[in-house]
Length: 308
Image (cartoon, rainbow, N blue to C red; front, side, top):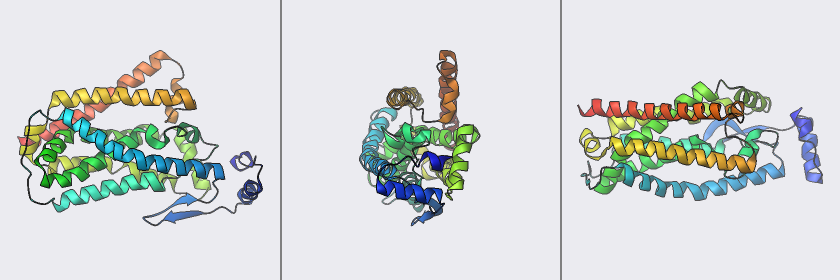
């Protein structure tokens, strides 16, 4: 059905593509840095243009999120803390965590299958790309956190900031991994997308797991093994961290609501079930906020256990 829907094309090139689609001649290929079939040859010129726009947008926004991380860290960290750097060079563990986080972010930016026009995700991403998803926010902030944690070996200022952000970043990591498998994966829209991409020969489900699964273990290892107990004790503020949780939740909700006003699509299919019911939305927002606070709290407990 989707092949015939996609065949409504006018130019010779698009007509040729439509013939290939209906003849089943499209192929799926692996990426040079990922041994999964993620690149599909059946995208229309319009879809390729949209994919290019999103990659350019990523190149602009990822560095901006680096600045955003530093602003958040300046707020979250205990004021006036100037922790001494733990060593003259980053540990192999810190470098390894940063490398994994950057690779996962690269997979999400360059290797995650680009949606087609017959998917709601295509419309949802039309304005701000994948920045409409909390997953992209988490992966980017976590990558910056772990990269800057490496450079913290040379800077007492960065040491304090990254220590002060560890619980917040950890909470985001837990949220993305657990909520993905508990809410997104079982949802009907996600299962339909998996079936659609499987029919195209693309490993959509596998790459989704690869992107979402590492955030939680990266957060735990960073907090318990990579950071020092003394540095965490000096820089972490639970009042500032939980204030940041609430502020970021409101900012993110504002982003997706504004995006919906333009695209008429929610980033997650499960949100369609909420309709226009204020009661359902209030319950959903409250539940997700409580869950994010709970995950941050669990990371706080890990911190307390580590420094005790």
